[in-house]
Image 1 (cartoon, helix red, strand yellow):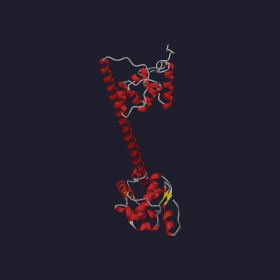
Image 2 (cartoon, rainbow, N blue to C red):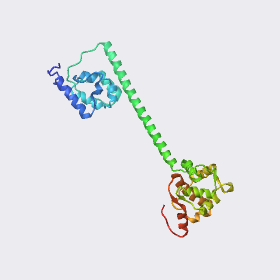
Image 3 (cartoon, rainbow, N blue to C red):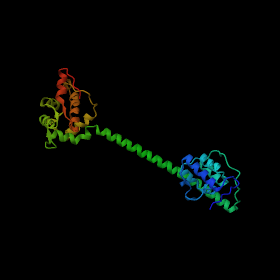
Image 4 (cartoon, helix red, strand yellow):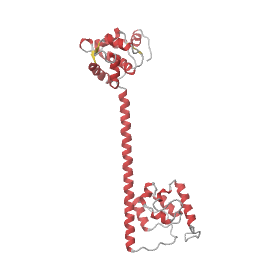
Length: 282
């Protein structure tokens, strides 16, 4: 049972314990930092504070000032070995120290050397732990950046025709039933999927964009898609665009985007409306 007598510091063991507990609450630190030298139900003492390895203070992210203030408030002496470990681990200048507690018994020269070695080892372990935690933090940061970049690239890829290449070919070829397609098949297959491209308009597109014989194979469509992906999207499509290859490519890109997405789109309305000066919003 703990004594209720006050020591030379003016505190009883129970009072010192309570001061330490209250201080831990103020700085929001757990008692787990002392787990190698103390267990719940026991009193926290100066011996517990000073014999706790320095790398455990580091692990629970204590600062030098917090450690020193805890010792000072609890009126516990910071001995030379602990002071050395503090300096090696944290650097900086000493804070306020309590000097009036009962002096410790002198250690033999051998014990002194052993204690110094232990303090040096603890400081080394604390620094090692600090480096490991920083390396782990950097590793996680790099992983997060890599995932963010992969997600960005994935979203960018989803915007391309190439990403929907299979869906587009399925739409224009009736799921591969046609090995190659002409403008009539192109028009009919898309109409079945809610994308209205009249045979007249489809022929004008194929005259500019189709391969030999006025047809497009799967390979030819893939090559066309690559070219279209290099073009900027157009907010509008007009009758005048049918007059050259670049204009036809612009219209075809809008058509294939709708085909790949499976969204209804009446291309003729947009193209022929522009001929008569009528504006239609997509």
